[in-house]
Amino acid sequence: MEYAIHTLLARTAHVQQNAMRPYLQKLGLTTGQPKVLRCLAMNGPCSQRMLADYCEVDPAVICRMLDPLERSGFLTRKQSQKDRRQGEVALTEKGKATFAAWEEEYEKFESRMLAGFSDEERKALAGFLKRAYRNVGGRLL
Amino acid sequence: MEYAIHTLLARTAHVQQNAMRPYLQKLGLTTGQPKVLRCLAMNGPCSQRMLADYCEVDPAVICRMLDPLERSGFLTRKQSQKDRRQGEVALTEKGKATFAAWEEEYEKFESRMLAGFSDEERKALAGFLKRAYRNVGGRLL
DNA sequence: GAAAATTCATTGCTATAGCAATTGTTGCGC
DNA sequence: GCGCAACAATTGCTATAGCAATGAATTTTC
Image (cartoon, rainbow over the protein chains, first blue to last red):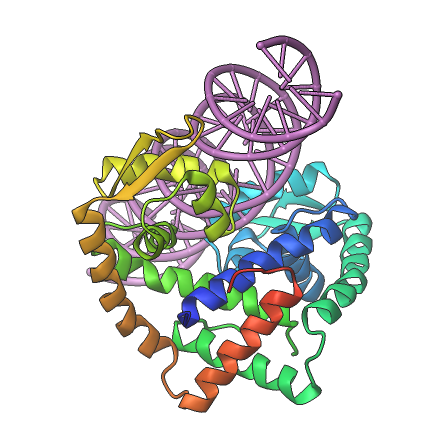
């Protein structure tokens, strides 16, 4: 039987997420948290609005995700001086260290997922995904 | 900047889902429902366990997804005669018609997502996704 | 400079998803 | 055939995600 691309894409992403969970759990992370930490690690302290834009999710999602991340001591929230509407979210040392550890751990995962892929194939896959991403409205990657 | 494959995959799947939502809403469907309808359309009446296996989600997820699908009149649930532990989930006529309409509607979406892809590229992308899917533990596609 | 529009964070509601525990039912070992 | 293991559906709890509405602060418009 033939599968539609959207099915292959959704299923692969879904199974991928389940496969990553044990790696993340070793570091005390859930599956959605690394992308928030990544934004902060790459861009430094951000407002929640910036996090939402970068992660391409609704601001409400970020708002709710920050509570457990703060409780776990990965980041801190405070009010911005310049604009009291905005918060300023920043990684703690623990947050930085945990994200760095995840980046290392992730290598193991990726080599498993792409086992048997040549360098050309990896490049081609990345290029295809990026093109499809842009075709359906993605603006960031 | 370079993006990890898992990021490209997760983001593309995520944006894809948001892009499909309006098409689905025209038919009164939510983003998770088509895969359940597909299983029933392809395989005929199923137990919830079969649906969970086919959709690669926890049986609890199927259990909770059936309530709204039943309320919308897309399917019916009854107890199996042979094994009273199992239920028997079956599409209604409305469910069949709606799924068929979705399959048509989906064509429009896919041609948008894969605009600019040659036939070879489509085949290559599908092949790559399937290999990655299997590498991370997928057993069905 | 005051009224209107916009922006940011948050909360409520729903959908999708995993895991653990529970209940009821079947099947197996003996 | 009885007890126990396995299995099916369900429910509770949490995480991720979208959308709508709200309240507070800022910016724009006039």
